[in-house]
Image (cartoon, rainbow, N blue to C red; front, side, top):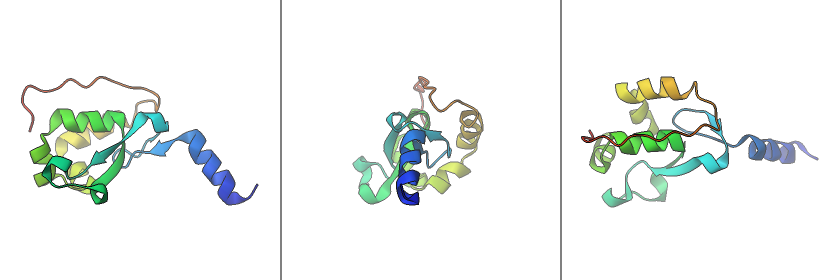
Length: 108
């Protein structure tokens, strides 16, 4: 078995890395987030692989309009104080853990 095959095998076992919180989670616990929502002209070039916890948090916190206007990159998301607070918490969570994120009555 060569090094590339071994590396691919290890990645399949470990999972995928969330582009927002950097946790390695099982592939089944990831989803594709459109940094610029499709409803606002986003496409495949505006995608990021996120763990479901991060993805749920973003859509519970921000409207699609806010995401499109203010948070069209992972870096921009990380700069937001509320996102930073969430990331500090989520990085302490086990990779296989899932949560239900309450929808806000008023999103930003």
